[in-house]
Length: 131
Image (tube, rainbow, N blue to C red; front, top):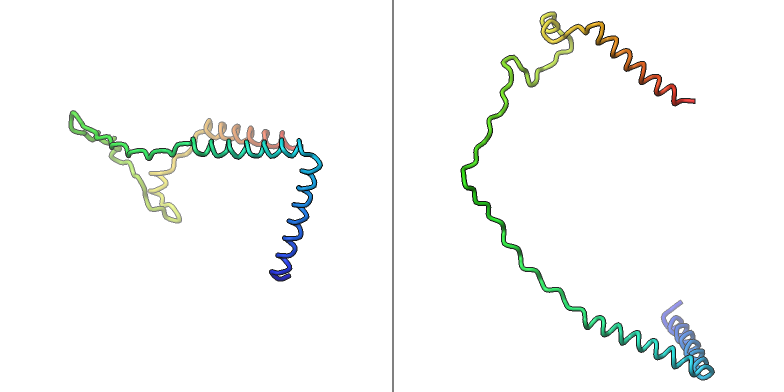
């Protein structure tokens, strides 16, 4: 389809539409006048509305707030760490006997029992929800 065929197609449809509109206006004069008046009123209202809207004025940039201190700032002291406190350490693949004595604590029976109870409770929750 080239441009001339497209142009002819558009002209044909436009002429058909204009003929229908003219026939409608001739047969229904009152309805055509009412529709035309409504469209004219709509466009007039649209023009008045766009003309009445004021353009927003550009806001002037706000003045930056200047902080004025009455006294000099003081940095609080940081909490002190205990003497033997290590923040980090290098871990080896296997602990020496001295390291196990220093870092590993043997859990008591009550700690083991409470861990077993909490594990049992979690298992019961999971299994109880399963069908």
